[in-house]
Amino acid sequence: MSEADRLLSEIAAIATRPMAEATAMPPRIYTDPDIHALELERIFCKSWICLGRADQMAKPGSYLTFKIADQPVMAIRQKDGAVRAFANVCLHRMMVLLDGSGSCKRIVCPYHAWTYDIDGSLIGAPQMDRTAGFNPRDRALLELPCEVWQGWVYVSLDPDIAPVAEQLAALSPVVDRYRMADYVTVVTQDHVWDTNWKLLTENFMESYHLPVAHRETVGAWFPVDDTGFPDDWHPHFTYETFKKNDDATYGLAHPDNTVLEGEWRRTSVMPTVFPTHMFVLGPDHLWYLTLMPEGTGKVHVRFGAALAPEVLVGLDDPETFLRDTIGFFDKVNDEDRFIVEGIYKGARAPLSVGGPLSWMEREIHDFIRYLAGRLT
Ligand code: FES
Ligand SMILES: [Fe+2]
Image (cartoon, rainbow, N blue to C red; front, side, top):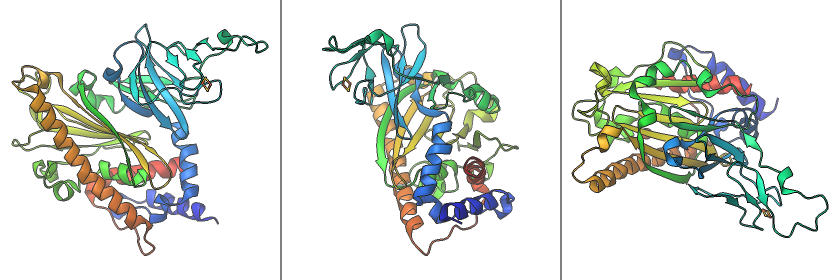
């Protein structure tokens, strides 16, 4: 039995345990290169991957890029308002076309200037008139499945994947009340952290660490016993709900929010859309991560925050407010980075073992069930 097979049968066994007997995964699951290769093939190439928010690409020609497994991809707003996605690689000699995010009238390859319309069709290629049978009109970038759900832009490499709305149908009733599609993006950042993607996913999923690792930021705002979980297990997502105390700086409904009632005015939902899209959806803000592994020990982290529209109306000093808000989430991210890089060092240590989980880590057990189902 190979090391990867042994690890997979170990996580399959952990996945079947009841929550009261759940444990963390074995450390080698985070460091084994064969597990990583399987994850790319069976998870990342077969899932919806979030690139960011649709309001970041409002006008025709505005785009977001990302990598799914080893494939660079772009999502780009069309003239008719639709969002379409394409393989982000030139049809000539494979240069990556677009970088980061931005806006363009057409897509011009930085290598020899082959030029594509924003609908992916090749419209120009210099000095190709002596090439036998070459007609740019015969060529177009490979189109990929792309959907916008609740303001999120998702792309997949799997042509047969089921629609996002179908996969997340049972999540909609939980999050619909917030109207998150209307939230306004105020920041996005890209980073590379020295950790395994699963350690960062698991870290984001549980609020057990908040009173400790985030004691200087969000940690003091939680009545811990009010943490809730879905009744059922879902194959494409999990979530928890938590409440904020009345003195929390973020996480309470703005007085002008007229849609949320009662306890929902101080309740946040924290879904993980498997494998790597995680967000905290509060009455006033949205804070998200989307990830892509770069080998076992590095992960591309795309972080963003958005605010409910009423929060941004009538501010005395919007600049200071936004600077403080972004600075606050930067600090929370730094606190998480310290943790997830630390646990990766721990996972690489030869004497490490995964210990038992708390009831507050229910989402980690859901994630282990998900991994076991996809990888084994
Ligand atoms: S690789 Fe794009 S034009 Fe040559
Ligand atoms: Fe955290």
